[in-house]
Length: 125
Image 1 (cartoon, rainbow, N blue to C red):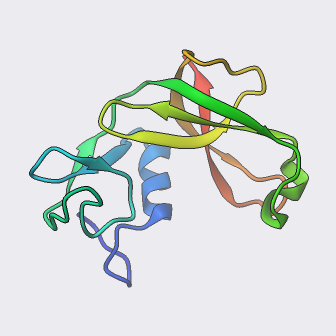
Image 2: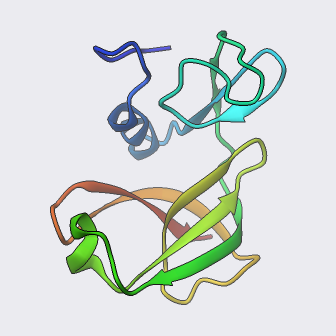
């Protein structure tokens, strides 16, 4: 597992892995999954986390349309945020405006209109 200056697998590093087609999640020896950055399993406290390939697709569980955004996303509004089940983990990302519960999606990286930062996005499969 790679580490940044704080000893955590970094969010930017995780986004890089997704862009490179190597998306992963962190799994403890008890089989619990979580998303980076983490140093311990949030479910059981295990410290031995391994990078495990993330399934290529997930299924939308729920979504909401944000009309009044935080300052860091004000120029992106309105936008749709969704949660998708990727088996061992659930992922939150921006989604297509016409997303529906049950849609099959994959992860990609986009850019915020507000500040140019990279964003996690769902795209339909």
